[in-house]
Length: 346
Image (cartoon, rainbow, N blue to C red; front, side, top):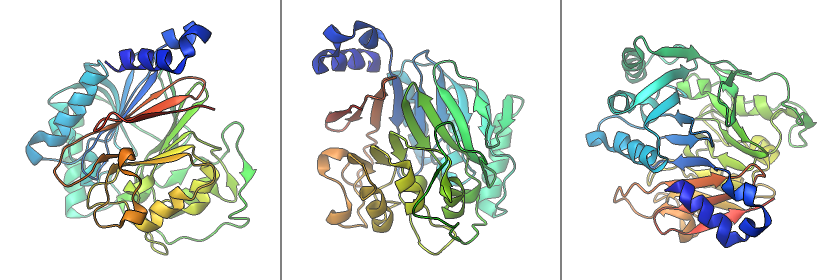
């Protein structure tokens, strides 16, 4: 279904008579699945290889597993080559048991052992290990790459550490932090998040899980180790608690990334905080900002226009946001609720 939609988009946009090879090529597909303020992001490369980042919440009558499976069907895949669990909070790993009963998972990847010894997180980790069982399992570290043929997946952060050397083309001084700013330590699993950069040709997409400010500054200060990206998934569901260890979406990082488009995987009453929203909204060069949900606890001035929001109320409708990306860094974002779509070209 999505492959046919990509071909139609090529035709409508006028690419077909100009570049038949481009339109014949398959797109990189990304599904930002609505798991009501958690995370589950499915990426399928042009060779049909699949990566799922996180599994959403547990229970809820298999709601999140159902939504992930719907995205898998839309992408025409019947297994997952890799599952990355960014960290062991319930909104990221809670759905793993239900999902694993529905679809084959080739390799489980994570940051290693749980670092937050609370009852809930410890129980989540124990359940996750039971699901992994004898399956192929890897603990990731910064600088690792996953063995995909149709896209490049680079690990930027894991287990409280970040890449130490700039990526090719990066390393420029960050004018927002000529000296390294300080940030409080975060003892929770958020700070341990696996963060990845996914590259398809010239297209670059970054997902840092729930990484908090100290880790973000480690990537951005005093030099930008990542460079610019085309698509930014707001960290920690669009959360910012400035001056605390639990803050995310630091301006030093967001401005350095210079995203063309940002997507916020918030819920109706989770994430989408005005401080984080404003930082992303004001980042230089941002063309558009999309949201999985209207942020009910915010205000109209800190929500984007209706056409860019996938779910407008608290009715648990579950509409995803989809992205189709081409190797020249042209990409189209599609709101599945109203079929509004917009194409971004270099």
